[in-house]
Length: 348
Ligand code: SAH
Image (cartoon, rainbow, N blue to C red; front, side, top):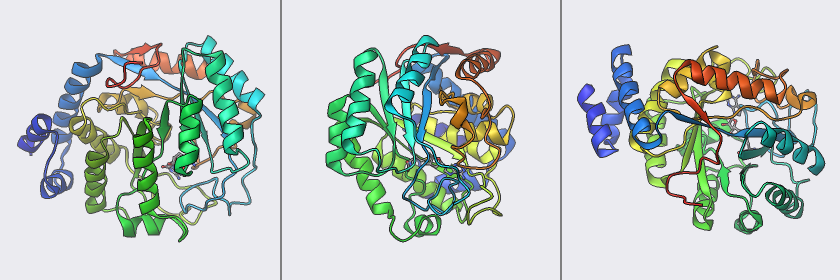
């Protein structure tokens, strides 16, 4: 198996069959070898630096009904909220004082935030904080909308593809959502000029080794700047309430593989990883990750953006999260960097 990791390290790719056997036949020893290689590649590209992004969850209204997600439209138990532009700017102000130079605006698919409103918000942030990057994570919109946000100053866009297998996608989403459109959005975003992030959950219901390999193949094809990978965790008020969580072990393995496949990728150790294991984020960084995304959302709404059960850090102030993260990263020999932390290909 080690020769496959060496091959991936050198060629940045494997055949479908090779990926499949690597995942199927992985052992703790192989995983450790993978992580060593992944760290080596990461350090060659980014040193020991870990980039921080301030996450602002500005609305949990959603028009979609994804079976896995706690803020799906049908979850009448979710208490809905929207931040105002002023609230969002306040979060940015707090974040900027704490050293954040990237703000990630994430929400459900909430069409209350029209193109016009989003453009206004993006322009206000960029106006006030010209040294900062704005990342959007607000789901599927038209090419024209994405273009308008980009022209307003948005720099990056996160849109996980969730699974690259058509049948699997249908098992996770209602009929009106399609993998085809999801992928089209990602290619549109790239074409417009965004730094783009895709990604998937590990251990989502009906996932197989085959669909995971398809995820890798799709990532190879898209060549994203960022990849978000976290374990699936059930939410008690969704159709997947009784499904099992994804494992820490497989999530780390996938992070390692993606680092070798795309050496320069920006890859977060996600909150979901920190939720299934108290040291999940540290382990995610040690498996090849190089980004963390502490929460900047106001404490008053923190526990309402519940994508899954038991989400961590829902009671903490932004500053606590920021310094907790710094301590955690320093504890594993990493340096938290105060800069925009653009992808290496972008010399803004
Ligand atoms: N509406 C936006 C943002 C979605 S939330 C969009 O569609 O892109 C961000 C990510 O959280 C999702 O892409 C999904 O991969 C993840 N997520 C949702 N529910 C989850 C769950 N139950 N467990 C783990 N991750 C989940």
